Length: 426
Ligand code: GAL
Image (cartoon, rainbow, N blue to C red; front, side, top):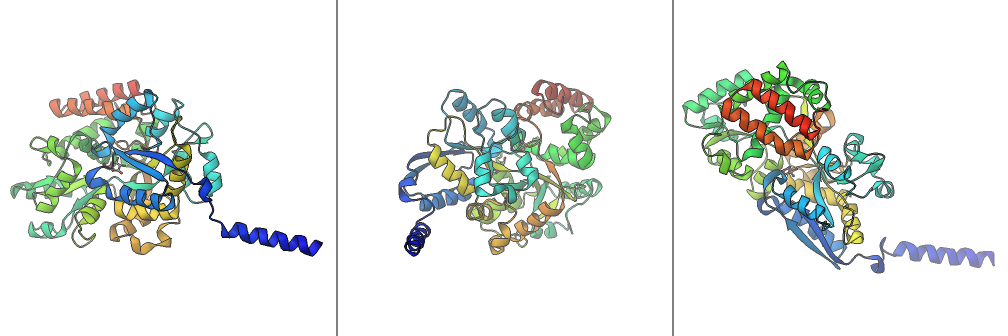
């Protein structure tokens, strides 16, 4: 009798092992709307991820809904209308940090995913510093797909050589010397594009002038936005802007078009996140390290301005089952290694690159090491250290500065915007 019982148990166990982890009956179906700003040139990595999802879940029809516009500047307005109108997508792109927490979590619009972290063992594979930026009041509210680096200065080595520039500038002094040489040759030393790219640049100038400790102190209320140190940031920002195309064609350029000017040899440097690596390698087919190069923004060596694209589960998501399957996949090694090499980012999981290092180009290998060793600081433009309202309103401070070139006025205006938005620890 006992033998018979053991035999039956063994048969049962073998049957269980032979079954897929999720049986066909449990497979999600219906429509799944994934909402992001990864359209057009920015699309290939997301498209590859959706294809992978469809291989696993063929009964789900994925709607790849996008709102064009770098850094989500147009997307966020549409998302707000939908969320407040009670029409949330199944899952949407949102930056780790204040953009997620200060906008959607405090307003009770996101579902707690702690249970999913436990089920998937994610506490062991996502860095605690990233999980902290997704957490509020004991809950965890999204799944990080990647880590992007913001403060990279991109260039084309062969062009620099043609112009007699032997290496990218390491200090601000060297930067201004290089700027003068390039301007003398009719080259744009540092290209900028539409408004958000000038905020992106401001972040790096602030880090360069303040150093990582004071940069962090600015967002946590330990350094006043209206202090002498901040006036020095605005002074330097003005000098840097004088090396850009701001007054010429900047407003009409997307970040991709600004990058195109590097490739065509009309501009020398672009301070932009490493989505530029994705654009240059995946879209334009160029080779990292040979066809294009990268350096830290002057005087920010050893610091890594990070941001993370994450996806969460909004309250009222129409297709919960399919959305949870999406979240499980983007948090997996398979999902992260499908997406990141194409996107120009590194996985948020600490164990993904080592499982397939050959997928990652020279730039991404370099950045994965820097992520592990550098001093990390959060990006303001991309939602880590300041909330959405602040980043939106900061445009006005830049306008005041660009029109007046008055650093004292800009510092005072920034303080008001911090207070109104409840940012900068104020
Ligand atoms: C960032 C985003 C990146 C990339 C970039 C340009 O905010 O995190 O993934 O899309 O904008 O659009």
